[in-house]
Length: 474
Ligand code: B12
Ligand code: SF4
Image (cartoon, rainbow, N blue to C red; front, side, top):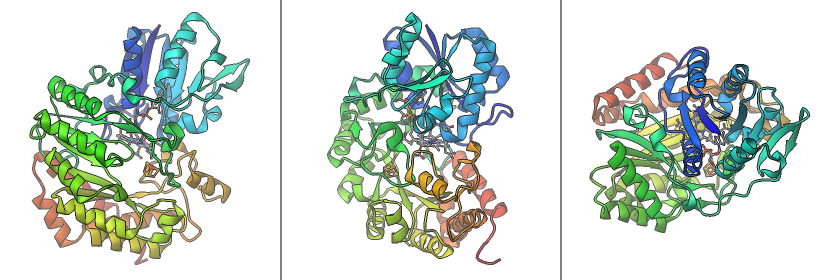
């Protein structure tokens, strides 16, 4: 059986390259498991290649896969189905399998589509391996846990797939199947500080013990936090450095810093192997899982930036979102990160339940007080499978239901006090209020280290100056 795994592009009709892209690690892990089991497998990263229909047809002709697996996040649901349609049109016998967060959350609603044969819910490695076996031998799909499939036109669901217990049992992602050494994944300057060489994102854990109302990570990985050992993580890092000249890393775990002892050991290993001066890295922290000792150890192991989800500067909004963090914790974490000599990136949101124009002002006030080096104000998006989605649908606050609009810079949910147009304007206003201040502009200029940095700053400046309206003045 030949398996082709596809990461959909932003658009199938108008080839569009993303401004920021990263390696599709879910497909990387699945491919590695299949390859280890001697299955012929290939990854087509349509996202980074700007794949269009013609290119896809060429790839299908050249490889003739028996199974096509497509990874689907909600805003790429339409593109995923378009890929499925093209595959089926070319050869109706090809099995089309969809997986990813959108399928894990909406299951039947996705698999009901004519062009989809099977949907995979949750982690895909073990399920895909069994599927290849069953589809190859004409076996019984009902024996494969964690899938939805069709029988006489009816969608059937099998028993849930158990989450992997020992992540170190997984082979490292199949990086060699991705165009990692062609500079395709290099991020904007704001994310890769000055080191020459390639970029790679990694994940070192799965799941999250928290359950913020707007987050759907539990839909795929559950609330059960599982980790790779420090040795597994640093082996992967070293392999990427030596084999693909990767010197800029980003740890994209839900919360990289969750277990202090483990991260301290990872830092120790990075130093022991002489990598700390050769690589630099950024990671996701959480304000209640960092302290100065940890941050200093991270800095000396090559970390240069920590990214935190702050979300709101209003405690009531944080509580409503079940965030489990407090404003004093946020302030302390930002102060400690700066004290450790690290750059700090804050993510904020506008439009969570309870948001008003006043609470947005609280958020901007907090942002100014903690003063991140880089800031993101996104619009809160209700991904299927979250409490936020349930609330928005039940109260008829979800105003745009086109999956393509489930992206962080489009407002699709109103709050009882703010229309979607208010939310969008508030997001732009917040961004501009933060950045368009002499001290921040000066700091940004001083932090420019490369042409890539300069380019990033010019793109941000253009967005700020030309697409911003002020709801507080009209
Ligand atoms: C790194 C990351 C990115 C990177 C790279 C994404 C990528 N290329 O995969 C960047 C920064 C580019 C990015 C961009 C976006 N991201 Co993002 N991202 C993540 C993050 C933090 C980690 C992803 C990851 O590597 N996970 C680890 C791997 C192992 O898990 P996985 O990809 O889910 O794959 C497993 C299963 O889902 C399943 N599976 C996945 N695909 C398939 C396919 C088949 C055939 C099968 C059988 C199984 C299967 O099996 C895999 C292995 O177990 C996640 C949050 C998270 N913790 O997962 C968000 C997350 C995936 N991103 C999200 C979103 C919304 C986006 C954007 C749309 C943001 C935007 N622009 O508005 C874009 C879309 C990019 C795209 N793919 O089209 C959401 C998706 C929510 C949803 N319901 O769709 C997540 C869950 C975060 C969140 N809760 O908001 N993202
Ligand atoms: S937003 Fe972060 S802390 Fe909250 S549930 Fe999701 S991954 Fe966990």
